[in-house]
Image (cartoon, rainbow, N blue to C red; front, side, top):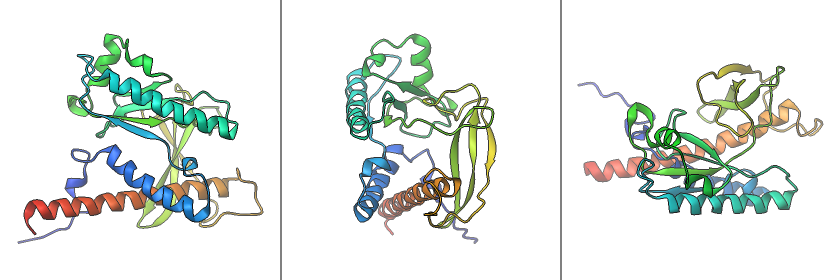
Length: 245
């Protein structure tokens, strides 16, 4: 009889996981770090909300969407004003379960969900393999500011093994804007070359120097790893309760 541990466990797949659960743990970790280094936690923790019982095809649950989209935008708008950020706040709305880049919408106002056309409702109503979407994750949008030499929008993706940041790549999309989801057909990937270890920031270099940007990306990656580890602990407790072990 062979026993083979699987990490992460199968129960931690997107069939069971929810973005709202992950980001609740991420928020806790980000707030702990922000308190230690004395910064505004908003700088590393995008605002989010969750709506349940949504049926896009029947236009059910729209009130929750409108209210929570506007709530996230209001908080973001206040923070933008505080820091002198001139961009217009937006949100990303997607299924709370895994979407694989499907069923994602950018919105600048809750009112946009009062008059979705049929094509938009159909696109938002189902996720991967046609599974219906009923729980929706609403997250503060963060403008993508990096570009390739060809001026295509590029967002960083960081890879880790254990607790170590090893490197990453850029997800690039030539037909998407700074406020759109880049995980979509037509995207391609370009290497992110870590010329230095980026374990600590370089005080001799400007904040936007590659070594310092990559260090900042690594900090966020570590926070996400802590959040994922806490998620896993929840799953182990739940699994033990269900199996009686």
